[in-house]
Image (cartoon, rainbow, N blue to C red; front, side):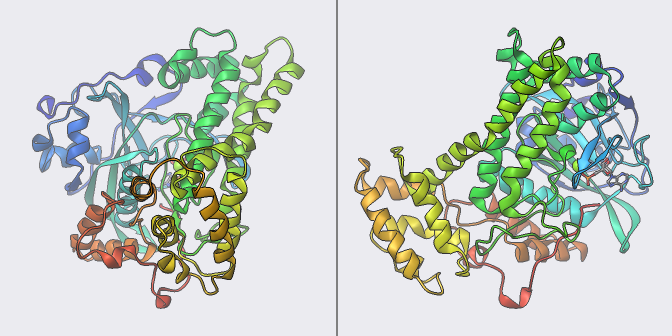
Length: 492
Ligand code: AMP
Ligand code: MG
């Protein structure tokens, strides 16, 4: 059915990677209802957004009906979760329904989360609930608008079921779109079983899909490691630049494409704090804000381990040497990606050797000062124009910041670009609006009471995060004191 909805599937994963998944279909649910459709994204995918509104979209995006040409399947993957290896995770409540080529010629996965049990469900019920589904919708769209590589929400559907979590919650399914769902954990699944031919097949598929320019190189597997390393370094630098804490950087939640995936207990910092942790299950702070670069490196080392047999089949010591060199180079690549982010935020077009100290020392000046990270950077365009008062006012005691400003002024004097153009560029690098934790909670709580207005309003504000929007001043503010310490829970 539903040929008219416009899905022109071309399912390379199903076709090329037999043995890497289990063909499967979604569960029937009592009352699938389309709650939200991301119309601009649907159009970008070549879909007929009008045809998908209402029942057709509800049937397809709940998983109850397969559109023509879909080959729904549950992907196999493993993963290190909080440092411990699980040899079998997989799509326990998700399905890849197929791939389409979007209007820009990019291959995109269409995937459902919460579509029922699969052979990978272990003890789980295969379901998702409304709050986490809308959360992933909102944060993914916010990240997209911030210019950060991410999976995106295509639709949210309610199922009409009551799903047991802490009490009963409304069941829901998220339809999401990704450059692919290849994860570090996908490689780990086959490497852990000693299935080197499958790891090679997977690596060749990943290269063809994400890094096709290296497909003919003899050293393509070590180059794949480099590419994924660099994509992850750039991604995490962007997270850090907007104060994002992913919260559950397990290797099954790290993509080969370099997109952010699996928004669970994620959050944004208000005041700058490298130790910031929000997830209730991250008791040791493994995935704290400031730990994210070193965790990315740790995850990449796990990825490298899966590739050793491919890097040099004849000489494992040599393969280890090569891979170790690439992993050891991560901090340098990360630092340069972070500096790119910081130079844009600080309005520095030239690259000078001392910039790294300038950027680091601003962060040191923020520590312990209850400075709102987002507001401070947004105020930097004012600082660069000689109006430092709004930035200063964010500090409990601005003495350290004032000292830093002296150096910043000297540094700006070495720029060629005019201050008006610089300020405009800075305002395009420093968002006014991020998904403030209390606003996200407010939107989700209202949605649970069938009031989608706060969700829609927040989504609209976050879709244009760099421009000041009338009457939206409160969306730019940190949580009020009575919001307390923010705690997030896993998105199950
Ligand atoms: P996540 O925390 O979403 O990254 O998922 C980690 C693993 O747990 C994946 O293999 C999921 O498929 C699985 N999982 C999470 N929630 C459920 C659920 N409700 N039912 C079955 N499997 C689940
Ligand atoms: Mg996951």
